[in-house]
Amino acid sequence: MSSLRSRGDKVFDVFNVLFVVLVCLVMLLPVYMMVITSVITVAEYNSAPIILWPREFTLSSYRYLFSTDDIIHAFGVTVFVTVVGTLLSMFFTLGMAYGLSKPFLPGAGFIMRALVLTMFIDSGLIPFYLLVKGMHLNNNLFANIVPSLVSLWNFLVIRSFFQGLPKEIEDAAEVDGASYYQMFFRVILPLSKPVLATFTLFYGVGYWNSWYNSMLFVQKAELHTLQHLLRRMVVNQETLWGMQESFASSVGGRMALFTESVQMAACVVAMVPILCVYPFLQKYFVKGVMIGSIKG
Amino acid sequence: MNAGTIKRNTPRFRRVWKYRALYVLIFVGVAYFFLFKYATLYGLLIAFKNYKFKLGIMGSEWVGLKNFKRALSNPDVPRVVLNTVTISFGKLAFGFPAPIILALLLNELRSRRFLKVAQSVLYLPYFISWIVMAGICTNLFSSTNGVVPKLMAAAGIKMPSLIADPQYFRGFLYGSEVWKNVGWNTIIYMAAITGIDPELYEAGRMDGCNRFQQAIHITLPCIAPTVVILLILNIGGIMNAGFDQIFNLSSSRTKTVSEIIDTYLYDLGLISGKYEYATVIGMLKSIINALLLFSTNFIAGKITETSLF
Image 1: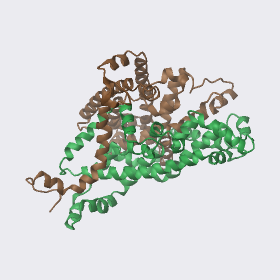
Image 2: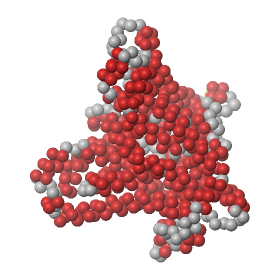
Image 3: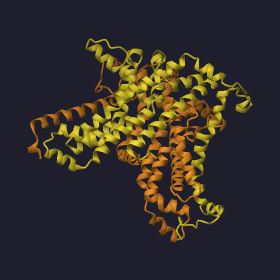
Image 4: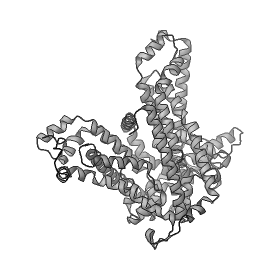
């Protein structure tokens, strides 16, 4: 084939590759600069406009971050919310999708119409806020989970996946006298592993990055999620100064730390879990979008 | 007997009882939607009340349309609506064509391996929360310590502050939006391109089409339905200009150009405690939103001949 490529083709190929490399650099550099800023000394930070590879690495920003209770609490809270939230969301979304994938279930048609209609219904912030308050979820970690328990989109995609499974599988199980619970847990779920992986990830990342409900409903600082704490540090710039003072005194007033570095260290801490799982799970995310788009 | 073939004349109760396990499985999920989508409609009554937290929604005094009149005569409302629509269209203008162009270029890459690596890098920003984005943007563009202004200063160029100057802030919103989502949004176009019949390209080559002509005359028309559907659906979401992004990136200095309906409602309702006005404006926004969504879905359905659901 390559012998047939014209000169113009080759020139285009070179420029195309260069362009894509450039776009990739634009995507990576900000993240790279974030990491670098979190590990350099203040002297070096001030010495040049951009540090691509530091002469001296320091972990003092991380040491400082983890010397505060705030980030340890926030980490624990976020792990709890992510694990419990993802499990609950998956369980209820799957159960709902399985039950409503049966067209013969009395009432299923009505429920489906009511569910699709919710796409167009939004009562707005205040009724939502009052409802969650009324459920006594204030200062409760479940305030991060309950209001976003089931995603309509995830539900619709999983349901259409279940509907696409061959009927014969369940017929065979039914002959063996299996109940619907047994069919759901022993037959359907084991057949749905790629779907389970995909949507566990979508929910997991959603919970890991969640901050909005924490901000609305959780006042106690030690119960804030990691992103919520990060928001206070980066956007409101509030916690940092108080934290910095206490740390400065704890290391004998030696100010090796600087705000930007600590902020970036906190961003790295919030991103690392996603960066760690990302390479392994990327294909599942992409698969999720594909399934969704085919449905659309 | 097959689960699906229960006799038609079986009493309804018996049929329901037979499938009780399925009702147990769907119960919590359905209850969630009922509670958060339908029961919340009750809260809209606040729009017609002089709401007192102690008296509750029912106990508070009816005031008719007074809240509507006061909320709509508020000069902030036209401003935030205009901001919302402007920012939405701005995002559409930059954010919509970008992934299409990128997908077309990715499709022309000859090395599959390089494509995979590039895709891994391009999808990454999608998973970064807007809060981490706020940190990254400050690190890069802060006028005091940002990397880019410092570099520019070293080159002798004085750079305006992109994140704090109202004149540049909207452009900054569009740019950061494109940065975060462009890669991820190529997925759906790449899928559409993969689905194109290779024979079309074969025929194109026979007719002497070069690659540019193939991209314009074969690839683009073949993904046009996807493009149109996504454009229509995006227009359906025009009232949502991106709460998370603006809430975390904007500051008091940029408020005049970046305050959108959603951030305004947050301030009005939850910070100032003006529940009635926030409910009124939220309700009107939802009605417009629903009409937009409904008509755009309808048009999209007409175009594809298969409705979206």
